[in-house]
Length: 67
Image 1 (cartoon, rainbow, N blue to C red):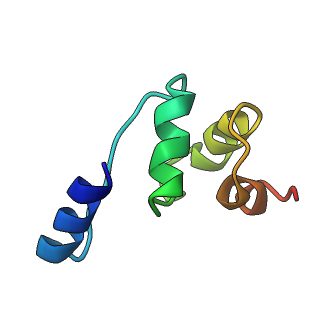
Image 2: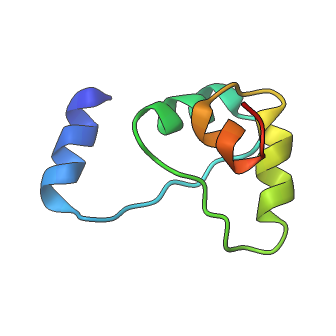
């Protein structure tokens, strides 16, 4: 995964991933690699805060007003 992310960074300035909210292990891994939640979609804040109940990560904690 590290190799793939480093290669991706060499070739692209911006990328995105899609995942289902129940794939919490994958979401944590993506967050650990520096991907950030897209908060622009309708209902995104609520959806990410629901994920934050199951995935403990600083990005989600700050997004949902928790520490």
